[in-house]
Amino acid sequence: MKVLKSTVYHPIDDVIKGENVIKSTKVYKDAKSFYLNDGCLDEETGMYDVYSYTPDTTCKASLNWGLTVLYPLTVDGECNMTRGHWHENRECTEIYYGISGKGLLMLMDEEGNTWAEEVCEGSLHHIDGHFAHRLINTGEEVMKVAACWGKEAGHDYAAVEAMPFGYRVFKDKNGKLLFKEVKR
Ligand SMILES: [Fe+2]
Image (cartoon, rainbow, N blue to C red):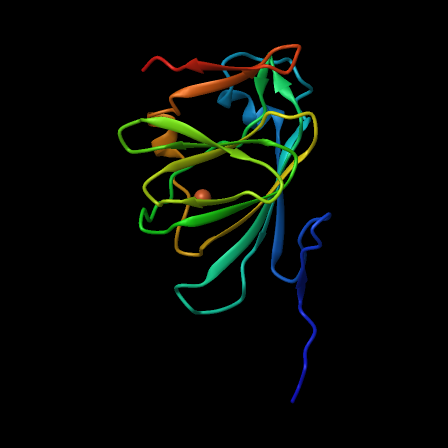
């Protein structure tokens, strides 16, 4: 029997490395519209990195594996967060797995009802395809969250821009979180 080496590795304290892995970095100038106020950060400040492993297959129901690395930054007091999205294909679900750091997985249904789950080392989160989702780093350390989702899911950012998440998450000087409701 032939025994092959894996072509991709994801050491738990590192990032995904190997074939068919793409890294993208969101910098402040491309993220500032997510926030209520301008935090006057350097335009090139790295806010988060996303690593995606897309297996080379023709199977339509193929799964992707990813990692989000969200830095412990605030923007005028608002906690650093991902852009957030629905899946274009609402029938595609996703699983998030907290690796390190702490924060929130914000979820929103199609009526705009918004809530969150605490993300920490070892937490596992099933995301229904009918819920928009966003990660927020509320801690003082880098937050790392792995993800597994269907290749056919796609990303629907426009729907989140049309109906933003119902809350914004701020942090005061003592680290206390403040949830501000978004007026629609
Ligand atoms: Fe997703």
